[in-house]
Length: 46
Image 1: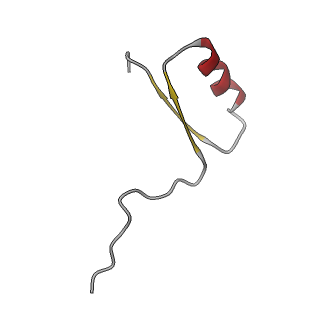
Image 2: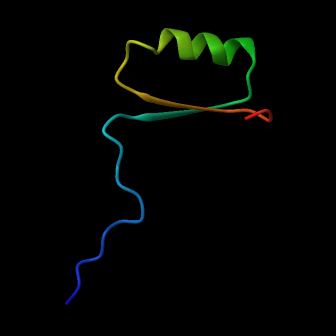
């Protein structure tokens, strides 16, 4: 009997995905820098 691993490992920290590069999203990223979260930023110029 094989033990199946989950498709994705759970992150050590909560994950925040920021879509777009507007000023509000950039400010949110700046204010979250000292928090224990993983931030993923996506925009059309990645």
